[in-house]
Structure formats: C-alpha cells, structure tokens
Image (cartoon, rainbow, N blue to C red):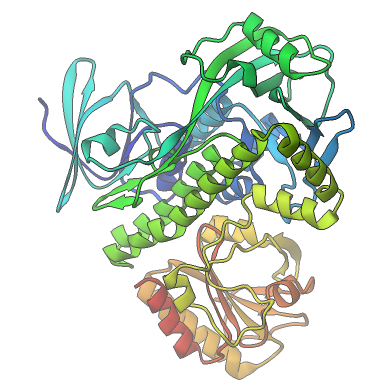
Length: 539
C-alpha cells in the first residue's frame, strides 16, 4: 500500500460526463485526478445526439469546432405515424447558433474530449478500478486497484461520474429511486443501402417503433421496439438476422440492413438519486439519473451537469464562496433531471399506445405538427436551451422585480448575441464568457460621466474583492465613449441585442456566470447596491 495521494477534486469515471468535468477543471488549472477502469475511450457508439445547449457549453469550453467537424447536423425528424406520409419536425426553430441535432457516436465524443484534455495538459488515470469509497467530514477517501497495487486517494470533493451502476453510489448507500420500465429495445449501427435520408426517420404503428439516425459516413443508427418480442427473457446480444426480423415485423416496407458495426438489445428504466450531493460527493450524469433514450437527452444532461458543478467548485476552493454555495448544484440540476425522467416516461407510454388509442395518437399528432408553434415548442424543448434555473430559491432572491417582463433574469440562459466590440469588430457574448469566465456588462447608454465614474469605482472594488475573477465591460448604444482611463473595454450595442433582446437599459448591470446563465440582472444605477448583489450571489 502506497502513501495517500491528495487532491482537491477526484473524478471517478471518464465517460462523457467525467471527461467534461476534467476539461472544465483543467481549463481553470484546478488540482484534480480522474480515475477510470477502462484502458481507453469507449469504442461503442452508445449515445449519439448532441443537443444545441450542449454545443453551446462545448463552445464555452472551446471544443465545439472539433465536434462540428466530425458530427452530422440532423435538421429534424420525419415521423411516420401509422401511415405513409410523414409529419416533419424541423429543428431550425431552435433559438441557438446550433439549430439541429448533431449526430456523432459517443466513442468520438469521448475521444474528442480526451484529446482536448490532453491539449490542455491534463490526463486520465486509466486501468484504475475503484474498490472502496468513504465520505467523511473532511473529504472523500477512495481506494483503487492499478496493476495489482492498491492506491489510496483523499480529496476535498469527489465527482461520481461512474454511470448507472455507480460504485460510489453503492458504497455510500445512496438510493437510486425509480423503476424498470419493462421494455426491450433493439439497436444497431448498420448500413441501409436503400435509405438516403438527411432527416431522422421514425416509424410508429401497432407492431412497434423503429427510428433511423443518419451518421456522417452514410451509415445509420437503427433503434426500436418490436412488440412481438416484449416480455421475453433479457439478453444483450443481437444478431443481424434478429434485427432484420424485427424490421420486417414493424415496417410495412422494410429496409434491408447490412455491415453491422454494433448490435445490442437494451432495457430501459427511470431512476434518480434523491439529492445530487452527499457531503463532499456530487453525483453527475448517469450516476445521478437514468431514463429511456427517447429525445436524445441522457448524455446531454450529464455533460451539462459537469459544466454546472465545476465552476462552483472553483470559486469555493479559491475562497470566493462558502461550501454551502455548492448546494445550488442539486437545486439547479435535479429539477431538470426529474423533468426529463417524467417526459421520457410519458413519451414511451404514448409510443406504446395501440388500437383505437394509437389511432387517436396518430391523428392528433399529425394535426398538431402542422402548427408552427408546436414545431417551435418541440424543437426548443428537446434542444435543452430552455433548461434554465430561474425557479430556484437562490436565483429568485437575485431577481429584480422592476425589470420589464421581457428582460432576462437570474438563472436564465444567455443567448449568444452579437456585440460591436471596442468600436472595431463584431463579437458575440460567448467568446467573452469563454475567455473571462465571469462577465459583467454595465449599460451606460451614452456619454454620462457620473455613471462612467461609478462604473470604474465599481470595477475597482470588484477586482479587489475577487482578485480579477470578474471582467467588467461598459456598454453603449453607439458614438464614442470618452473615459479618463483605459481599464474598462467598451462594447457598442449597435445591433441592440443587449437592449432589445435582453432588456438592458441605462444604469443596468448584467452579471453572467461561466456556464452562460445569468447570475443577476440589476436595474439599479446605484452600483454600491449592485456590489452587494455580487456578494449575495457568491454567498
């Protein structure tokens, strides 16, 4: 037994959520260790859909370009609801720079994230099997086996990113509440020579359901449920012949499939831990929640969980916030996880309707999908861009009741709006967040010396209190802003995105978090009161 290895943050698991957490930690130059039992990234495609909000999070991390290069931007879905003429759900309605579902195998997602981690100077400790986890008052203790040798670790905080069968969750006796759904799905990554389609194609009838997801290389993910094979003893192995048999059963005009890369059966369940935090341990991704794959939500939730917890750990470890600040991870992420569990369970029950009920579902579904507002609602909901935190008690306490109804508020996601930066070049909000982390916009509107002076005084106090953690910008509608110093950069809101779309007016302060959500939007031009809100945010 070697001596105890100490670290600030210990990550257990290097799937997508664990790798995302490692990247976020490495970006901030935080002290961490990531342990993974596997010898390398997954070679299986597994989860395959990256939603718009996750792509925005990838952009804030600086890894989005590699995903865009390797993924397939699916523009929408064709839903064959018991008939030949499909209903089309278009994703261009999504209010994001990424109005599509990026289809990319999980194996490539893991590979991209690990390569990016390596480029930042980080790494994963592979072939480390966790054998014991203990949570104590002073931190988390972990024993892992590597090459026959036992290693002991102690961390101030532990991120359990070790999946649906989490060893961390088991050792700490944390319940995983929920139930199995009792359905068996088939899955295959195959060639479909007769299909040449840019849309996801879903066929739903009384015999079952089948969906085809196009990959960039021209092959397809085929996933579905054959009603004739429900209730049978569970098995994982699926043959190409079994897959073809199910397609022949469910589809009126079946496609032939060939050249399988991966074939499998899988069951579904919906479960969630009662609290995403247990002392010094935080549950992330599938260790915190699982559900069926309808809507392509699972991996995205885990990636967004990781992005939420790491910046909070950073400010606590640096002493800017107290440990209780970390409770907001559960308060913000658990309701979203629960909503997805409920929604995917409801969608599966709707899919399972047969006979007269199935016909009513098909008729009402087709009628609804002709409505533009329904298309927009579905597209934006599935994209996760409305996964916001404005309903938590902390964010409600930071909201300004005097703001206009349209103004953006604490907890809401900030869209990547255009700015005219320093009067010379167009720039959007996200690159500023990626560069500086905490971004504070003070809307001066025009040449107002008293407000400019107060903004300078505010920024000086913020820099002193938080040691340069927060970057302050002045925002004007146009013209030339004359200041006595050159410390504060000036943004010109010539596109009126901050004014018209976010509701900023003269004297307003908009404080944005590193994950692209609003910390607070304050209408008071008294920047001493605004400074108190900064303190309140980190409390």
